[in-house]
Length: 307
Image 1 (cartoon, rainbow, N blue to C red):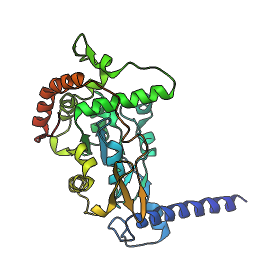
Image 2 (tube, rainbow, N blue to C red):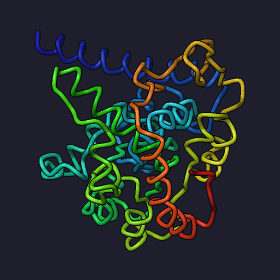
Image 3 (tube, one colour):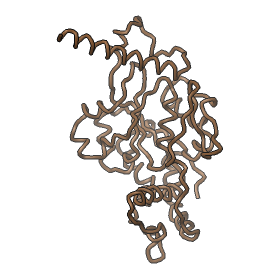
Image 4 (cartoon, one colour):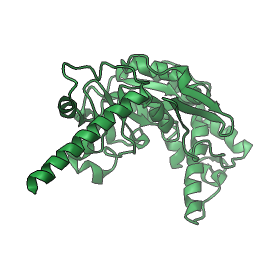
């Protein structure tokens, strides 16, 4: 009886591994990839090679900058596997105390040659995270997707407002949170998250600039393919993602993904109408952000068309 149970469990594991490989081949259009080539194509060798690995790439932020869209788009590549949920390992003490074995257990199963990608936008602004990531892997590659920080702030507020209204709780209007005695309130947390230069400076104290790739979140929404091609090059991935993987959904008002005949759109929270902010307050916000934005441009060696 015991041997029967053991054999059944082994068969189940082999079938699960075969299914994972088949799904990956379907997503890549049935084409062969170096990640799958080996001296033996038997199920047992595939099983031995498939395991959960620590991420070689982390999308560190920014919050409400397009991290979910970037993750889903990178997942179109046959050599990429992504952690489906935000892990919050490095920025939540309860998770961090569980150790790297717990963190690895949150990762997808991959084959040698495939990249494991994790994304938690809360990492970017958390002071303790850069050193912790370095301790995990000093060679990890870091993706930072940014958008107009004024628009990001409004989107940040909109998400919090929606969550509170869903729980039947009230929330102050954005004008009241952002403006104090006629001036921008520097203590407003959503504003602090939009000061990209401050957070990046902390990361650059730990990691060299070459390990970062900055993605233009506004450009990613307007036309995803050029930004994905740049990300492929940075990650040393063969160019597998193509313009045919994207189509514009006129109903939703943004691009959706197409792979192996199946389409996928981001959930309804993406593209949600922004909460109101007075024109006067928005102009004050843009003026306030000019100097921080300039400092950020100098740090990354490029500029963006922000307000």
